[in-house]
Structures are given as C-alpha cells and as structure tokens.
Length: 296
Image (cartoon, rainbow, N blue to C red):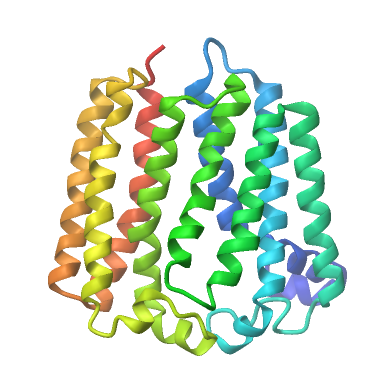
C-alpha cells in the first residue's frame, strides 16, 4: 500500500492502522508454524477444511493478542525510535477502539477453534493468549526473563496445529515445541542486541540492556543454539522425518551454532545482524525440509 494511496483515502489509512496493530509478521509466523504442526500430524491426504478452520481461528487469536500487546505497551512504544510511529503512540487510533478490536479478535478466534476444531486446540490458544498478554507483556518492564516467557507463547502454535489434526499432543508435538522455543532465544536476543539502546529508552530491562559487555547474552545464545541443534535431530528419531531431513538439520544446526559462537567472540552489531538474518532463514528452511521429507 503506497503512502499516496493512504493519504488519498482516510478510511483506507485507518484500516491499514488496524491491520498494523495485529503485527502481521508475527501473526504470519504463527500461521506458518501452526500449518507445519498440522501437516506433520496429519495421516493421509491433507484435510483442507480443518486446516482452514485451524488457521483462521489461530490467526484471529494471534492477531488479537498482538493488538492487546500494542495497547499495553503504547507508552513505551512512544519512547522508542523504532515504534514511535505505530498507530497508538502516533495518535492515529484511540485506546478504547484498539482495545475492543483486540478483544473481539481474540474471543472470536477462540470460539472458532472450540466450535470448528477441538477443545484442546482452543485451550492451547487460550494458554498462548494468557501467557503472552498476562505474563510476557507485564514482565517486559520487570525482568530480562520475559524473553523466555515469551518464547513459551511463541512455541505453542505448532502444538495447536498438531492437536487440531490429531486431537492429542504426543512426543513429536513437544519436539516441535522445543524447536520453536529454543530457536527464539538466540533469535530475539540478537534483536535485543541490535536495539539495546532503544529498549533502554522504552524502559524494558532486556538482558542486553543490563549485560553491558554482552558476555551473558552471547553465552545464552550459544547455549540455546547448541540445544536447538540436538533437539532438531529428534524428528528422525521419532520417525516423523527421514534421513535427508536429519542431514539437513545437522548442517543447519552446526551453521547456526558456529555463527553464535562467532558472535560470542566478536560482540558487534554486524555479527548480531548476521545471527538474526540467519535465524530468519534457518526456521523456514528446517521446517520446509521436515515437511518435504515427512515419513508416513
């Protein structure tokens, strides 16, 4: 959407602002990881209607959760350079209408999951909503450990996809959860390093804000990258993916770990950006190969 088109149509600009509240990139990642869980759990031909219902409900819950997060963090967003132009801190949208928008999206999504998918998936959606908005968001202004709490919320979508397809959660579902959880720590700590000054201005005591020399940050990143490497090999052991996936996971995990170890040696912004960019590539490639080399 061009700036000129938005300026020419106030209604269109307003819709775009509401859309921005849903954090489209985060919601898109939630949908992708949910679809991965569903596809890997499915036996036989892919059931498109259940998949559509799962993605619709999950997408609405995620979007609503993101809106509520933006509502809660509007004052902090106004203090940070990278977020001060968001709809709420910029004054383009009001508090009440944004709050109502977020609540409606989340409630409708949960109801859809309960009515058209199954109670387990709806319950997981509710758990993600509560952990993200009731725990992660308030903890962001209190403790660096908020990153780990937020990683739990971000790791739930593959469980939702799995539960939607099988109406249960088994060992392989928890492997997907583990991959998502472990991947998020180096990914988000790399972001936190890149924007450490901005987070300090916003009043967020991220690990990178207090860890001045970065030693604890890079130690955590390398530790979780190493754990991710090991857990990413488990789908083959669980007979959910084949040998090609195992070899790919071995190579990808080694490359990710090496990058994190390099960042541990050279704690610079370019190195943090390399870790961040590779993390963006790593996850879709890993899941993509896992889906292609699916067993059964």
